[in-house]
Image (cartoon, rainbow, N blue to C red; front, side, top):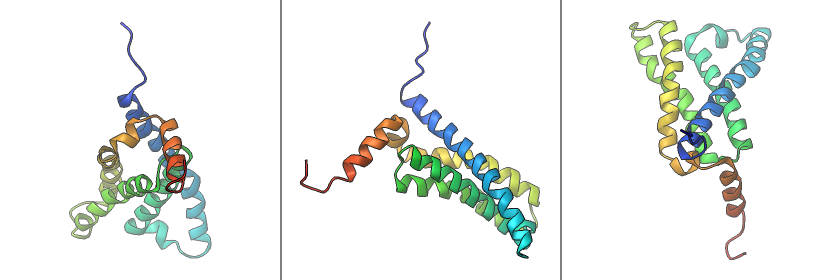
Length: 151
């Protein structure tokens, strides 16, 4: 029995895997230098307190993912939506943290775990973009850049 590897489902999973890898790369490639920079300039509170630390982390993950999505030909609306999926799980946990109901570790674990379902939800709103091949993205952007009435 031969299993089809290519197709809409595979494209969806491939997008999700690639974006997840890019998030991790962004988190480490940008996060470690930023931590050192913040300490060097006296902004250690950005490293030491839960809320700013998780917002900086979400930002570094979003940047890594946005760069990769752009390289792969994704449009800006999809990049914005996917970036929001990095922040929403952390932000959703803050009220519980401020109320003393969860720990810093819970925010980190739950925030990271919920990012994947948040990404999937964002992807479901743009199935055409995430189930198509990456070549489709590049072609559709080239078509969008052509002024109206020009063939």
